[in-house]
Image 1 (cartoon, rainbow, N blue to C red):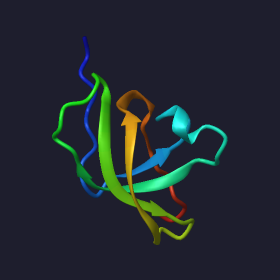
Image 2 (image 1 turned 90 degrees about the vertical axis):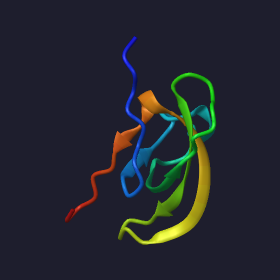
Image 3 (image 1 turned 45 degrees about the vertical axis):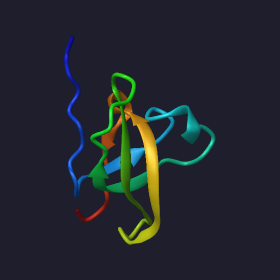
Length: 80
């Protein structure tokens, strides 16, 4: 079985329903990872702590989210 890569601090990810059903029905958002929990979870899932970013890349909320590694995508912001 292929092991999915865990995000690293500083990475910016696009969070949508692909990452977790908890995000269904809301627009995707950019999330800058601060830390990745070393605590064990279900296989292929991880707890991330970080900042939700606005369209200009500014932090608007600090969050802890539980996401599926296979659903994480790199964020693509204009000018970056």
